[in-house]
Every structure is written in structure tokens, then in C-alpha cells.
Length: 451
Image 1 (cartoon, rainbow, N blue to C red):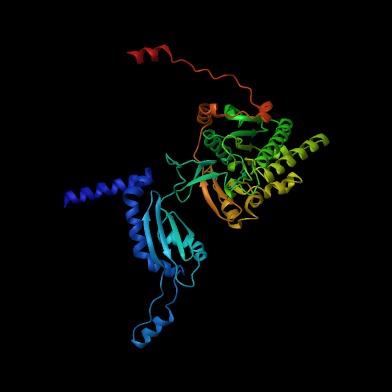
Image 2: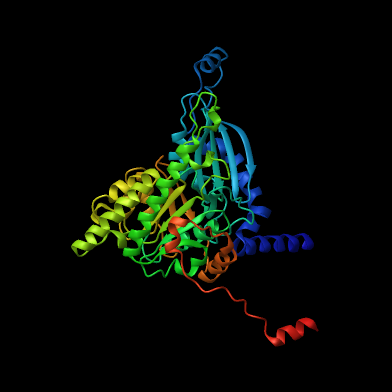
């Protein structure tokens, strides 16, 4: 008994230490077993308490009366499958007649408390089937991206979702995006992770950073074009519009709309062009859009109108030409002047970090996902990098970007500097930088290495 007691005590101590220091290890060793037992043992009672059961059918009631048996109990959805993941559990249910997937989404918070899970989200897999994805621990407390996140064509991993999945920025699916957030909210780190992810792809990066380039200039070796003031930004955007028109002429020449051309060879964007003719896709990153929209004189107002008009044209027409927009700012409302709301309407993907007021959150999600507004204003100040990501479909999820130092981002950008493409229309805006010089190792280290 003494040996068993000591062994049990050591196991319990190890479990507590793992739960405090390494929650992921605790989940894979102890937590997943406890969670499966809790979910299966409390399944019927929890769903009944949450109002997710249905009364027995009429024929079952009739059979109970004929056999003089007790009235059948309310029926819970049937479990199709339950399987663990590295961050939680996934429970797939077959709905009973009369149930709706929205009922499970509305009851997700009550399910989280009843099953003692960190988070529960519900989504409809297909008609009559709902999937509950449960998180066993706070995966956003210490963000650790998977070693192989699986980047693709114009698709880069930038953050971790609260359900443990990787959040991707997919430009083919959502071409243009808006990123808002207050100072020290993690907005710049999100943009830094985005640049690092794009650096390894065959894509041209174009930056506009009107804070004298303090955010994007350190990464300039991977940028095809860079503007650090509003005057240069106006000229750069005009050159981009001209490049877009040239790309459309290329697409128009290659459409070949004749009767003998197969449907699959007819194209309306760059991705169906032959590889030898396909122009390099471009991602335009605007660090602070308010600096482009503010003005104090008549001349600055004219410049501002040219800038906003060019941005609106790029947002409306750039997708087919392979030009994608990432617009960042602390606020993005109508007070920035005419054309701003038209530009915002073209930005499908929305990411909102911590904001200072509810109005700023409404600018991002008020017209597409009112529930996300409340989640945005509840982001804590001690969780920089936490954000709410959504799109025009109304769906949203809480994410957090891993911390990436500027030094490491610069090193990665320099490693991929050879991928920086040359675009003739933007050659005048190519950052002029000295060549990289590798510093030789000190003599002491060389001697020790040879020894």
C-alpha cells in the first residue's frame, strides 16, 4: 500500500506540474482521458439541461401507453463520432427532427461550463450533422505554431485559432483585408508575421508606411516597392493602377474566345494564364491608412483624393490582376473622408485587435457580424496579438499571433531577398539598399573550431 500510495502521489504531482507548466503535455497524457469520461458520462444530462433534447415521438408515446410503461424520456442527439486532437476533442452529432445547428451555437458557453472545457464551438458539417469542437486548455496563452503549418499558393499561416487550428490568410479566397487595432495591440506583429509568411512565396511585396518607414523599412530587401511618405505613396499607387491595366490587356489578349477553344482554357484572371505569361502576384501592405487620408491644405486634399481613388480602383479591380490589399489602421471610419466607406466595403477579410472604443469595433464588424463587436471590445490588454478574425459571411473566430521579434523577421526577409521580383512599372520605387556583407567569424572562434 505504501508503494502504491507513493506512486499515486508522484503521478498526481506530475499531472499538476504538467498542467501548470506544460498544458499541452498535460492534455495529451492526462487531460484527454478525463475529458472523454466527463463528456460521455454527462452527455444526456448536460444536453437536457441546455435544452438540446427533443420530446419522444408520437409512436413511442403510443407504444408506452399500450404497454403501460413510463413516458419515454427526452432524446438527445445521437453521437456519430468522438475523437481527440492535440488541443481538445471533436464531437460529431446527428440532430433529431426539429433541432437546428444554431441552438448548439447559442448553448456553446453552457456546454463549456458543463463539460469543464476551455472553449466549445459549433458548426454545421452538413444537413442534420453538427460538429462540436472543444478545446481542453487555453491555447492562446502561449502561442506555439505547428512546425509544418502547410502554406500554399497565396496562402500563409499567420496565427493560431482558439480551437487549436491554424489561421491562414488565403488571398485566393479573400483577396483584400482590413486590419484595425489600437497602439500596442499586436497589429504590427500580425503584419510582420504576414510579411515573413509571404517572403517565402513567389510574390511581389509593395509597402506604404507613412511613419517614415519604421515598420516596413527594416524588411525592405524583400519589397519590390516601398513608399514612406504620402507624396511617394500617391505616385506608387498610380503606378500600380497602370500596371493593373497592363495585366488586364495581357488577360484580354489570351482569352481566345473562339468556338474551338475549350471552356477550361478561357480565363478572366491571371491564374488561368500559362506559366510563361502569368504576371507575378502583388500584395500591397498599407501600414497606417489614416496618414493617407488626412490633409491640412488644398494641395494635400487633392493628393488625398488621388490616393483614395487609386486604392478603391485597386480594391474593385485588382483581384483578377493578381493585386491584393492589406489595409491597416487604428480607425477606419467615415470621418476619414469621402471614399473611405467605399474602400472598406471592398475589404472582405476583417481582423480587429484590441480597440479603445466600441465605435472602432463597429467599423470592422458592425455591418457583418454584430457578435464579433462584443468579442472585440473584451480583448484584454495583457494579451497583445489577440484579435477577432472574420469575413463578410458573418462568421468569426478568436486568434492570436505568435510574437515575432523584428530582428528575426529581418533575418528571414534577408534570407528570401533573392525571391524579390523586378516589376518594370514599379522599378522607380525599389528600395535602394547596400549589399549584404557577411561578417567573418572572430579569430578565437575559428581557432577553436579548427582545434
